[in-house]
Each structure stands twice: as structure tokens, then as C-alpha cells.
Amino acid sequence: MYLETLDLTDFRNYAAVHLALGEGRFIAAGDNAQGKSNLCEAIRMLATMRSFRAGTDRELVRWGSAGHFARILADVTRVDGPLRLEVIVSAPPTPDDPLANAAGLWSADPADPGQPQGIAPTDRSLPSPSSDGEGPGVGPFPRLPTGKRIKVNGAPRRAIDCVGLVTVVLFEPADLDLVSGPPSGRRHFMDVTLCQISRSYCRTLSQYQRVLTQRSALLRRIRENQDDPRALEYWDVQLAQLAVPLITERAGLITRCLPTADQVALRLGGRGLRLVYQPSFAVDVELPTATAIAAFNEKLKSLRKREIMQGVNLLGPHRDDLAFLEGPINLATYGSRGQQRGAALALKLAELEAIELETGDQPILVLDDVLSELDPTRRAALLDSIGPISQVILTTAEPDAIPAAFAATAHWLPVRAGMIA
Picture 1 (cartoon, helix red, strand yellow):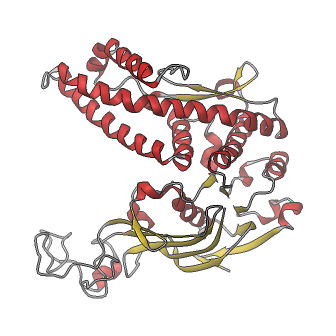
Picture 2: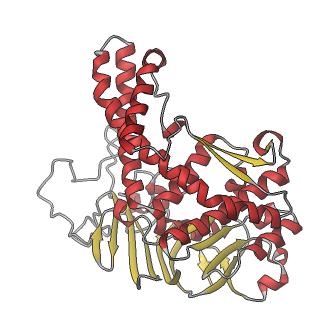
């Protein structure tokens, strides 16, 4: 799998960029704060439909953008055939936007500084934007609805149905802390990987998170004597039915990642690596799913008093973890910084192979400024380990740090102030 072309419009600091890519290795080089990570962010969004950096989608829209939307358009070559994927993130102008204020879009009324002039929430006299978001607007700004719109080969699609159409393995500096960081980061790794592999997992995870929120709110109400504890029975069943498939899929993923992670760790100078999935509830894969769900439900009942007292959900995939062992040593506790980084590198390359094995298509590998965080030995070992991947996109602020053998086979993309040569 690889990107044939990538177009960015008003995405982060890119006003308009067109890249003709194709198979091979690409090095986006430039000083810090020029847009290298923004490029990686756009590519990753094609796979997950979400930013790995932004708190809200509004942050993706270039500051001062006249249209108040950001657009990613990509032509992708896959084993299953070509794909054109378009993601548009729209955000209405805000009171502190200089272009919006200059155009007089925002009311100067101090009592209501956040309301566009002449547009009340209930005003239905204005024409609605078209389905393409190109309809009439106010002044020079099209009135795009807030949110995200996605098209696959020209047809509108829901975001959850588009996750995994393009697969991307991203390695960024924060991933170097996968081993030593909080469990939430390791759970996020498993979820992002599995969502690209299985749309079923993605939907189940989304449903599980909604049930978890509802059940947590109910536990707090019961603790405050505002609800009946018997109301938990319905949510217990829902939680168990969704939790067991998630736990089973996570366990399978780690099993598939084990051989590659171990081999890569050895190549990076370690003494091998063992990944151990640590679920809050162990599911015996030899048992029927219905039996596992019933056992999960029984465990919930045994925890009911504690959950009500604490007002939180104590059992489920949201409590899982992943351990990294080198022999008997837990690297999170006793590993050196170099050992921990080597294990994180091994896990990421194992992720790439796991996705390829499950989907039949090789993911795009994106390395966002990670080489600067590694010593020369691990830097060279990492690039030697990635092998013949269809497309590798690497960013760096230190071009001289790229090993000569890798640099000689790559296409260079100079990045400067939101422009890519």
C-alpha cells in the first residue's frame, strides 16, 4: 500500500500542498516547526480518521483560513485496488479569528461576542449549505457545518466505516515511552492497531466506551442514593457482551506480535523480548464465548460493592495492560532507557507485520523525527530492520544523521514554512 498523491488544503500550516509520491522511501527534512509532523498527522488521519496530536478538530484548520475548513485528499494504491479518500474538517470562525473580524462576521455586541451577525441559532431564513459544503454562506466564508465529512471514491461515508481503508503505522517520539509510560498508552496502541485490522473491533470498542460511560454515571448515582442498584444488571450484561470480544482480540494481537518483536529486539542489540498481555479479566479462548461472558458477568457481581463505593468501573478492557519482559526482567521497572526504547521500536515493527498478515496489504510506515532520539547504533539498526516496505515516510531535522545507505535510496522532500519542495 502506498500514497500516489497527497493534497493538503488549509491543514495546520499548509495553505496548499500537492505531493506526487509513489512507492519508495521519502525523507521530509527541515528545521523544527516547519510542518514535518503536520504532514505525518495528515497521513495518519487517512487511516484512523482522527488526529494523534489535536485536542479538537478545530486545531487542524489553518489559522486564518478563509474557508474555515481543512482538507486532505489522497490517491492510494492498495492490493484491493485504487482508492481516493477525502477528509474535510470544518470549523466555523471564532471571535478571535482575525479574518473573521476583519470581514465583520462577528458581532461587536459585548453581551453576545460569539454570535455571527444576523445568524441566530433558530434563523431558518438563510439557505442551507449543499451536501458538498459548497452552498451559500455569509460574506466570503462558506457556512460549512462543524465536524468531519469523508468521501471514499466520491461517495460520502461515516468515519467509523473508513477506519482501516488505509493502514498506517506511525512511530513518533512519544511512542518511545510506550514501555515506561502509563497503561493508557499501551491500551491505545492495541486499539489503534486492531481498529485498522478489524472494523468489527472498532465498532465494538465504540459501543463499549459508550456503555462504560453510562455505567460509570449510574454507579455514581447509586453511591449518592439517587438510583436503584438493580439498574446495574442491564448494564452488566451489556458490558460483558462487549468486553469479552475486545479482550479476545487484544490477546490474539499480542500473540501475533510476539515472534517479530522478539526478532527485532535481538537485531537492535537486546536479548530478545517477550510481550505479556495483562487483562483485568482473563478470557479462556478454548471456552465458548457465551461461557466467557457469563464468567465476566459473575465477576462483575462480586465487585459490585467496591464499584458502588468507588463510583468507577473496576473490570474490563479499560483496565488492561501490556508488559515488556527481557528474560525475567520487566523493562518498565528495571530496564535502561536504551532497553525501553529498543522494546518500543520492536513493538512498532511487529505492529506493521501484524497488520500486513491480517489485511494482506503492507501498511505505510511513518517515522516522525524518532531518529534524533536514538543513538547511532539503534538508528542504523532500525532502518536496517524495516526491510522492503512499499512506502516509508521519514521526517528529520538532522539530515546528516540519516545513515548514508538509507539516504542514497530515498527521495528528499525539503519542508520549509508550510511548503514542500
